[in-house]
Image 1 (cartoon, one colour):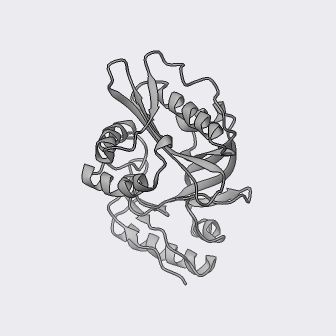
Image 2 (cartoon, rainbow, N blue to C red):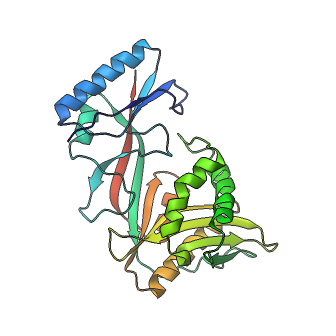
Image 3 (cartoon, one colour):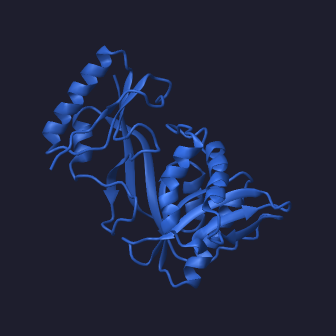
Length: 266
């Protein structure tokens, strides 16, 4: 069953241009999808828009990206999915890659980074007071990702609404907090055992306000994965060219999926 995508007109700018977005959805085939996209381009150009990106449900808080390459291995929870013809659909309508993202797989076990930052302590969440944990996470995420393309600040209640269900299903051992000598929270990590890619720990989100804190937390995730019998750590949905992708290579991450946000100048 096809569900034609929604068009979003209030989205973050792409390269300073007035930008709209094609949301996630499905096309019966590449031909009909390309026709829909071409008509959307014409309509938005007449409205004064300068660029169109997709698939993206409004911002990076919504579902976005399509798969452009896979090694055929199983998917993981919250991974973008779609039809095999999605890429051809966008390319047929004159879209090119606006952003590339990757997911990689690494072996469990420490690489020796957990104690690399003096004064930083990394511990698992005790499972208590999830709202306090998410409030700390909110402040770190809003600051840590503020310069990321297409990132849009959201009110704290919306952030809590999005992450509370995930936290309710999480394994506290893999929710990590990094603190400094004064006990202040300087980093948080969300990782979880994956229900789809059996035997994997998915390292979904980590953010730190002190250089090296993220790497220390990632190292602890890999250590815990090995201690609890998991066979791999998935480095999920990293934007190409930024620190998380470089860090994945430090853990010998092997890319198994590539994704793209597609864009077209109007």
